[in-house]
Image (cartoon, rainbow, N blue to C red; front, side, top):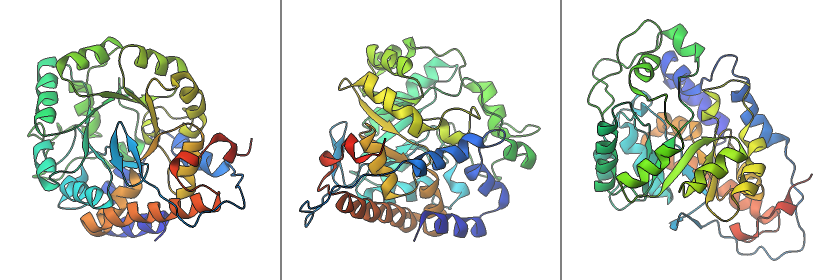
Length: 350
């Protein structure tokens, strides 16, 4: 099933406010749309007469084996999509052989996510809160629960204006909470998420907080929300092991550059000193080929996974990821590449 079909079915299943929360972007949603369009504008230059009788999609990300170079992006409040929420996503990602990145703002605790898919690879996405003691405790919990990396999200000094959420006065339903905190977002006029961000997230984070996190625990730190080469280089210089090129799915600064456009200069600036990943608008296996050709080690997939979750819980998540892997396998073969390592810049038309 194609990604747009997953979304259509999810839209039919979900309450409008939940669908809008997952689907929406900031302001006029120009970056939201451009993320998808930027991958589609790129064109491939396939090689011919290569033996592609055997094609493998497996690779590693920060040394962890994955069945394809696509990880599950962190997404908050997943019980809005399915009663099992993040538990089901963890199980689906494990079944597909890839890494789930669990959000700080999960509706299932980080410990329960780990228990749902024992032995599976998993990372933890972190918002640094104004209460640094609580943040350090959260990081310690993630390490104790077997999470293998921290994904430090840095593009939310303030929350972008998500007009769909403001119109719907988005709130979590009664009984649903931010499980890592044990409480729902505060009630507010407009979006409860905006109220939570204003009251808890630290707008004063700087590059020194990467060093602080490295001192809190031994987990490798990836920095998510980077769109500039100079910022990427500065993150690596203070110890980041990975850079995630991201504009928060078009949910923060509208008219920000699409991630496909930002990726090449960041990959060049980082070189071999850290691994570069990218999210935003990845919908097809050909998009994954293009991202790798532009210098990414792997991609993160967010909304399509949520649509799969809404349609079928863990099986729906697995189906989305396996569909993407099938498309990626076919795209590799048609490009004359037998493996991820054979995806090089010359496959892109310039």
